Length: 146
Image 1: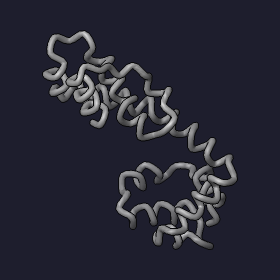
Image 2 (image 1 turned 90 degrees about the horizontal axis):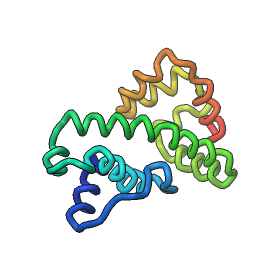
Image 3 (image 1 turned 90 degrees about the vertical axis):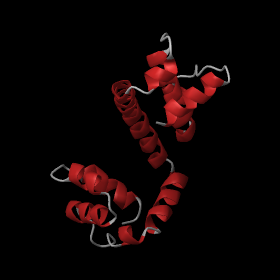
């Protein structure tokens, strides 16, 4: 949705969104400008691009494309950030500030992680994690000091 709005704004002021999604270093630029580039690719040669953007099926295609592109980029960046000692300390500190996560101290297990996410209201995430092998996630929680 952010990319659609950014594309519309850029088009209105006569600018293009030429930098590819994967080329952005920071997430927020990626979310706005990179996603706008994807929108632009979908509707570039349409007679009335603003009208095309109103079509829910087109927006659905764009969102699906974006989700498929964003996952590998974010996974790679998260892995890189966890390799950096300074980032590990910052992430650990941030996670320890979340009261619900503190319940995992001394009680780290897949079941407890899922329970905490449900308690936080992240039910879709909890549903997705349920029944999966969470050893990798548990490893990252351990890195964060849980």
